[in-house]
Length: 178
Image (cartoon, rainbow, N blue to C red):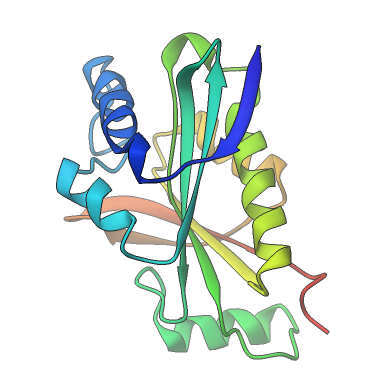
């Protein structure tokens, strides 16, 4: 049985353990950002939502959405440029940053990443977040395809997380913008 729910700090160890399992499967920081246990602990000190997918009470996938009024991926100038390019009339006040989505190997290909993104979009709609941003490794073909299938638009390539290449994707949550 599949259960999708928002997670709280009591799941920190499970989140970290699932990430470590994925890295043992051959992922590296060129494909996916690696977080320390301290990073996971810090997540719960900031505005965020974490969505987990459970199969038979076992965490098999999760995603972290960080809510920011100042974005660390794009500068405020880049956000203004994006807003003008898209013809948006309202200033971008809150940005949701998709920090990480992990799916356990044997559960890939079931649409869990897209389900988590859909949960993030629903969260954005109900929390006045009008822009979602994500960074994806150009080597992570599955994630690139999933973000595009969900309507995210490629913006530019940047070096992030210690010099690793990432493609920046964005999606305006138009129902929020009046």
